[in-house]
Image 1 (cartoon, rainbow, N blue to C red):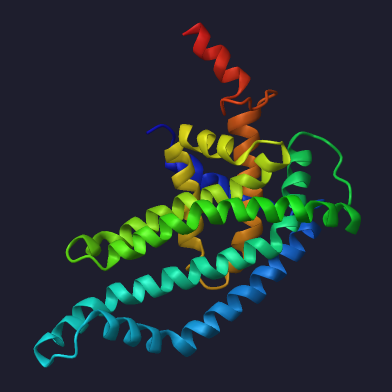
Image 2: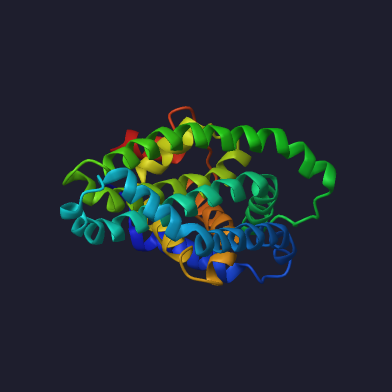
Length: 265
């Protein structure tokens, strides 16, 4: 696999550091408020319902036989992790659908700034015009995401194999975080969903490093509230530095510069 996970993680750190910059910070406000509202709701729901959900799932898995009750203590941590991951990703999906047009605008303004273009305010007309396209793009991600998530959840209930399901879910979550946020700058530059996935696969380790730090950061209280706008900014830096350099993505998912390098080699 090509790429550098540390370089990918650094894109997120640079995105986080860029949030307070003049000309960018007021485009961060709406995604930040959406993130605060959604994840506050997720935390409340977990505290209120998590014990009930875990008991329900354990009851569904284990027969009500006394001699099997010791397995509840072995399965409890795995089920708890599964519940946390499922709630986290479910609320992330909702937050990203709601914030998609604003994240698209934020990515566009960051790219303008990185390229030395004057950053201008966006009116509501521009934001409203983005809604149909960004919602359609979010649905494309869901169609990609849900079947694979369902497969991993089913895998979790298979004896022995299910023990590695939390690890597979985390790695898949890292990959989806890279897809989720790198899609904003690529969509702004008319890169199709298929081309975007192919492009990230060319730098899979960099993508996993970027998505992995997002996934870990989302588990840290308070910091997780800043992660959505920071990830959008970091993904835009990723796009500009790794995929453009004055070139464009073509139908193969490679940049023109990469094609020239391939021909020379």
